[in-house]
Length: 331
Image (cartoon, rainbow, N blue to C red; front, side):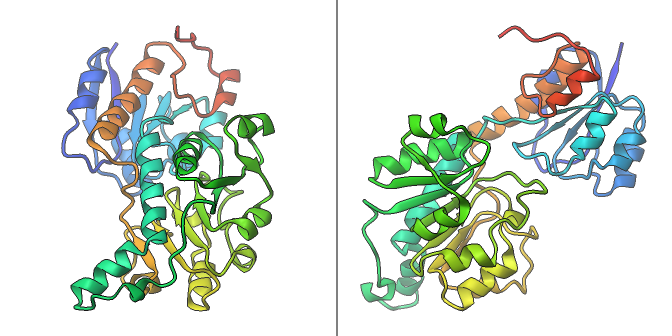
C-alpha cells in the first residue's frame, strides 16, 4: 500500500532527512506551505499522515481528513494541534521531546549569564563610544544566587545541573513533578509565587497549554525582587506580555531575556524592542545543526512507526490507545 504523507508547512532548506526515513515504507510525500485550515484540508484531504510545523491542525481540519492516522509535529510543543479532537477521532499525535535538551538549556543559561553580566548592554555602550564599566552597575556575583524554574521537565532539569555547577541554588514550580524527582537533583519544589519572591533569575520552561497561558502575570511580577531577571525559552504566551512590559516600565524587575514572544515574528511597535534591559532572540534556542537533523529524522520516524503498525516512540496523546490498537515497539 502507498501512504500519502503531507508536510503541511516548513522552513527548512532541505527535506532529505525526512525523505530518507520515509523511504522505509511506500509513501507519496507531498510538500505544502499551508497557513490556514482550508489550505491544510485541501492539501491533505486524502492523507494518512501529516508532518506539521506551524500550520493549524484544528478540530475542523482533523474532522475533514477521514484517512488521517497520525500528526507528527516538529518540536516538543503541540500547540498547533487540537489534541483533544485528534484523540477523539483516533488520530495519534507525535512530537519529539529530547532533540534539543542541551541546546535550549545552554541557550537559557547563556541568556542568564548575559543578563547577569550585562553583556549586551555593555557591548552596545562600547560600540557607541562609551568605555565605562559603570554603565552596567549594579552587577552581582552569580554564585549563591537563586534560579527559579517554571517547569521541571527534561530541559529545566538539564539547566539545573549546569546552573548548580556555577554555585546557584535551584527552586522550581511544577505541580506535575514528584517531590522525589526534584530531591534527586537537589532542586526544591515550591509554589509559583514563592518561587517568584525568592528567585534572582526565573527561567520559563512550561509548555503552552490552556492552564499555562499567561501564568506569569501581574501578581507574579509584583512578587519578584527588583533585581530579578526573567528568561523565556519556552513559548511566548506563557508570560503575559502586557504585564511584563508594565513590570519593566515601572522597574519592578531588572530585565528580561526572551527567545520567544507572544506574536512571532515580533511586531515592530512592541515596546520590548526599545528597552535596553531586554535581550531578544528569534526563537533560536532549539537550534544546532545536530539538533535540527535529529528533529527532522525523529518527526518522520513517528509517521513511519504508525503507518507500520506501531505506537511511535514519542506518543503525545496516550489516551488514544483506548481507540487505536497498535503494537508496542521493542526498546
